[in-house]
Length: 141
Image (cartoon, rainbow, N blue to C red; front, side):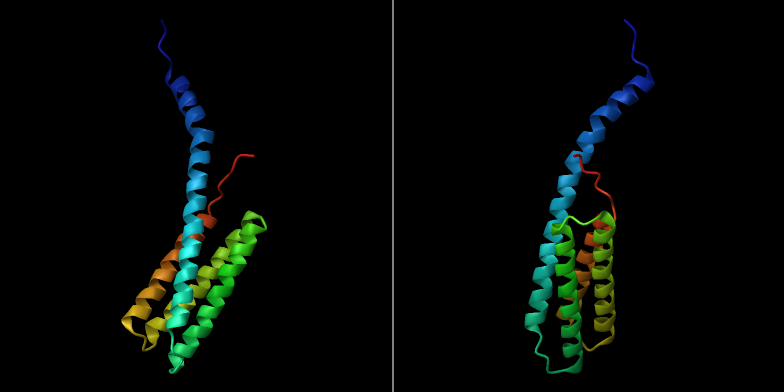
């Protein structure tokens, strides 16, 4: 009986890992991204509710969080309308850029530590969303 060649083994491995690996990885990525968007939305809303608007930095942060909220909704709509990968990637990038500006503001402002930490967490979530949206999922069908 002949042993299979290395090429034959590689072809079998690729056949088993190719579409199955993509189909297993894609739903996990979609689920993780949906959860990250939901978590980011909850965090931004909680931050906005917690601001008193008595100080200039609080009013500025509230305005910036309104912009973040708008970009979250735009990203959700882009995904829900099944727009192209490029549009989804651009929407995720705009959301992340807005949070970068927000984090820069809080780093320079007289924000309390809890606010700075929450904004950093939001930035981290937006980075995760941007990174997943920048990677084509190659869904079957």
